[in-house]
Image 1: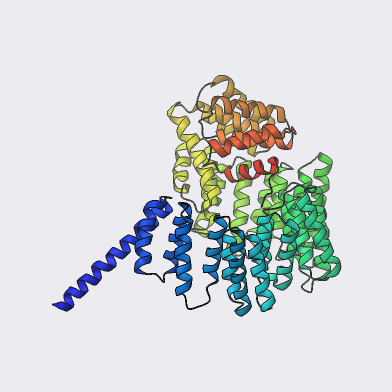
Image 2: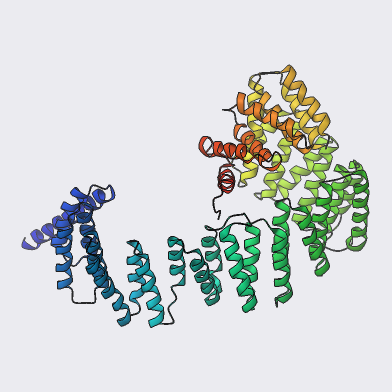
Length: 595
């Protein structure tokens, strides 16, 4: 019986303690320090050696300006402690500083620092304790003393972060660079942290300082990591030609002699539309690689750049280049991508879909792995759609779905089935396919599927004959066939004859995109403004706002208008797929350092 009673009392006691601890933390987290104080006093009386309760109790006293009570309880804890207690001395010192007794505060801080001489492992704990109280100079002393007492310790990461908090950018940079010299595996973390202090402006003071420090290291230390960091800095500034110079230096001095970094830079440069530098990069890859697949892909990248500013003369030059590449690499195992690219060129640029289809059908007779087969059939389907042979295209897309079940390529093929059905006016079948794709693992496919599904459903309810939708589908096909002028003209029919209907914003947006392709930016701007004004709650509102912001920034040189539009997405469209990019571009235009 006594044993049962003891157990019951023990359980009740522990429940009471647990409840006190929860309530203490609840009020503490909520900033109600008077109520929190009551519970922490009870907990400290029960468990005087529990430093977590002690320090929380002290914090409550300090928030309530009861510094004498805090001092009393800290000194009592210090007197009862049988071990070295640097954290207690920091707390006591901090409490003295709150009482404006700087002399006693400094004396206790120095005692805490001396503990590191006796045991260097205290350095991290002491340094962090100082840092949490914003005693940054003392935190620096603690970390440096720890490394001096035990050279095997390295607190440069912590020191660099503190220098950054203090605004000592040069000290921060140098300490981070020392850390990389000590252990190169820190490179990624260092880049992320440094990225908080640099901008994409080459003339920014922090950028210039980092460049100067890195160039100094390059001259005194043969470690290629300094060239890598310089390249990274130039990429942040979008100074891709300078990054290319660093990457060439790395390539020439590297034992591995890999072109991967240069290829990655070329792709980034291409994505950022610095076509001249991208062309130079891929030409360098061609001249220095011995691998046919890399050489072919680099040639194709250059061809894609050339096609962006095409003329009839340029088209003929590109065809000659394709013929030369096919003559040299046409029989190699790596020629599949080359032949697909040539087929697309024949169909979409030379308007020879029959020759293009025949080329791919012949290619399908070769021994192929299932992915190459799928890529060829996808390209063949695309060309057959261009040639308005929709049923044949649907067969190839369906074959891909059977060939690569549950693969992203299969989902892309299903979307193209829906898109092709849309072009031919079979809206019901298109909608059936799109319902399946709403849960696609590819976010891009899922978004495109949702947008096309809403286009069909919204404009079928309002117009049972689907007249405007059929015109829109035909205009979309013309755009796909590289006939932008015809597509724009057809979309005008919707804007004139179906004004005020739900399809109007879709027609305005599609037409704006085509105007941009034709470099008719003023006309594109007018369309985007109409969508923003009259369809501000529509599904295309954020698309129009973002695209218009890009026009103002990239073509009209009006950064104030661009900033206002990016800001509009940030505050009015937080769920937009453009939210992250808008926030980044807004901050960049405002002059913030961007990571």
